[in-house]
Structures are given as C-alpha cells and as structure tokens.
Length: 182
Image: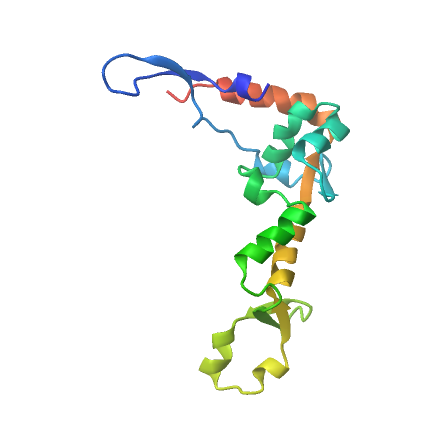
C-alpha cells in the first residue's frame, strides 16, 4: 500500500533522451503538527524489547503492512538508527562504539534555579576552564553505557495512531501522494 501510493515519473538517467518510468522516491508527505500534538488521536507507547514496527502495526491495526503508519507518525525515516535496538544488538553496538563502555561519557549536575530536577550535562573540559577543582565531586558520573541506554529509552517512547482514525489517515496519505507538485 505504501509504495503503491508513491507516484511514478519519467526519468532520463543517462541524459540521452531515453526516459524510463521510475518510482519518485523523493516524494514525501509529513504528518500535520495538529495531529502530532492531538492527544485524542495519538497514544503514547513504550516499545518492548524485540518489537518491530510490523509487529506493532499487526497488533494494533491487524495488518503488519501498515508499519509505515507507525514510522510516519513518529518521523522515523531510518528504522536502523531511529528505532530501539534489540538487547543483543544494543550490547554489541555499545561494545563496538566505546573502548570502555563503562567509562565516563559525561557528568551531570542539578540545575540550581528554576526546575531543580532538570539535569545539566557537563563534559570533562568544563571544570578545567572554570578552575573548579571540587567540581566533579558534586557531579554525577554518567557512563557510556548509561548514556546509550537513555538514548534507547527515548527511542522507545513512540506515539501510535488510534485505530479509529486509521482509514482517514491512510486516505489522506493517498490523496497527498497523488497531488502533483508541478
């Protein structure tokens, strides 16, 4: 369904006047901001270990081929880097990315005014420039693994379109993809 809606164009790839009909992979539509902020049609969901956009679409919409709806609602264009990893993938990723996964990634201090529950990331060179030798004794150490786990947790928090609005969403997608920009 998703690829069937992408328009075809005539394209001369060699510049020799021989045109071919190709899928216009550059054609894009975006979810309206009003929809992204509407709590009545979107639910927050925490992706569980091993879940894929297909498995979520199958569970929610009874059709794994509607995985593109899950991805589009969440502005995910690269499911390999914007979707949470399986636990084994994550461990391999962290071990390959860092020489010492349990080494210091950065430090955090609590904000001292306003919302004091807000944490401020501070990196190694910050204390050097300020001349504060006691700085790191007041800061919380965040390891490389902890940092990457937080990044994965952010990716786990997605929005899902209420199934009652699915048909309308799919129809609007088809209409928008069918509109010409010429």
